[in-house]
Amino acid sequence: MLFRTSSAAFGKRLFLIHLCLLAAAFSGCRAQGNIKFEKRDLILEGQGKTALIKAEIARTDAERARGLMYRQELKDGEGMLFIFERDEILSFWMKNTLIPLSVAYISSEGRILEIHDLEAQNLNPVRSSRSARYALEVPRGYFDRAGFGPGDRVGVDRL
Image (cartoon, rainbow, N blue to C red; front, side):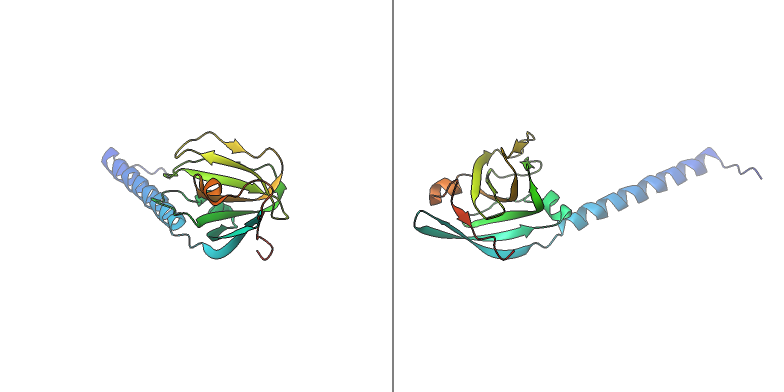
C-alpha cells in the first residue's frame, strides 16, 4: 500500500523530529553537566614541605571528558585529579575551559613527572613526554607558588 502525505503534513513531521532531536541533545548536555565528582584530599610532599589539595576525582570517561569545563574559578588548594586505568602518554587540551590551569603528569607511584601551564580555551593538545597514570589540574602557577615540581610526590596511594 502506498502512503501519501501532503507537503504541509510532511513539514510538520520533519519539524517535530527536529524538535525531538534537539530536546534529546539538550537533555544529554544537561546530564553531562550534572556530573557529581567524588572529592578527596590529596597531600603534596616534597623538599620538606607538604600541601593539601581538595581534589575532585575524574575516574570515568564521562568525568574525564567533562573535567573543569565551564568553571568560572578555581582557588589555590583546589584541583581535579584524572585517574587512568594504565600508564600511557596523556594529552590534555582546554576546550570549554574558561580558567588557565597547570597540569602535572604523575607516575603510577605518585611522582610528579612534569608540569605544563595551559591557556584557557586553547585547543592545542599538551602531551606528556612519557607515560603517566594520573594528571592533576590546579590553578595556573599553583605548583610554582607552593614550591612543588617534578620529583615531588602526590598521595595517590588510596585512590
